[in-house]
Length: 221
Image (cartoon, rainbow, N blue to C red; front, top):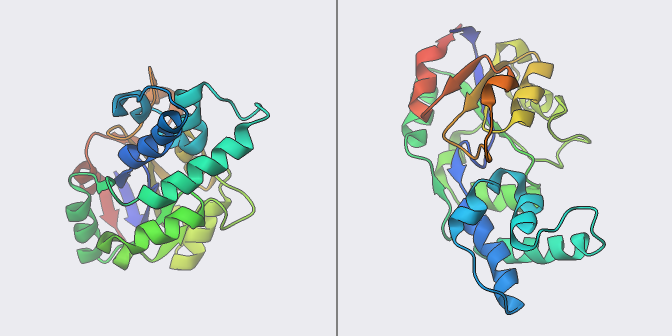
C-alpha cells in the first residue's frame, strides 16, 4: 500500500497504450519494401517496448552497432509517423482507472522514452491525455530513463514532491528510474515484458496484472 500519494506517473507504450500493432507495421513495411516476407504482429509484440531498436532487431536482426542502423532507424521513424494512430489502442481498464484517479483528486502524467516527435501528436490525438498534468518525452530532459531526471521533471511540472509520486511501467528501466527518483514503483505485467522476463528481479514495490488493480494500492494524502 502506498500512502500520502499525490500523483501517479505512467510509462506510455505497454503501460497506457498498446502501440505494438503500429510499431510492428512500420518495421514490417520495411521488409515488404525490400521484397521480404511479412512477419505476423506477434513476432514484434514482445519487443515493442524497445522502440526502433527492438523493431529493427526483429525485422532484420539489426543492432545499433550496425553501420546501416541510423539510416534504417530514420526510415522506420518515417513509416511510424504515417501510421502511429491507425491501430494503437488504449489498454482495457486504463480509461476507467485514469477517471478514478482524477475523481480522487490525484494528479497524473506520462514519462516515456518515446521522442516528442511521436509523443506529442500521439497523445494529442487521444482524449485520454487531456487531463494529464505532465507529458515528459525521452528528449525533454538531457537524460532518458533509466536516469531519474525525466521523473523529477514530471514531478516539478505537477508541483509534487517525488516522494509523493508513484511510477507505473512495464520495463525494467521504468522501475530503475522510479527507485532512483525515490518514488513508489509498480510493474505492469500486462505490457511488453519481453521473452522470459523475470520481473521479480526488478525490485518493484508492486506488480499489477491490470490497470484497475493499481487503485487498490493508492491512498491519497
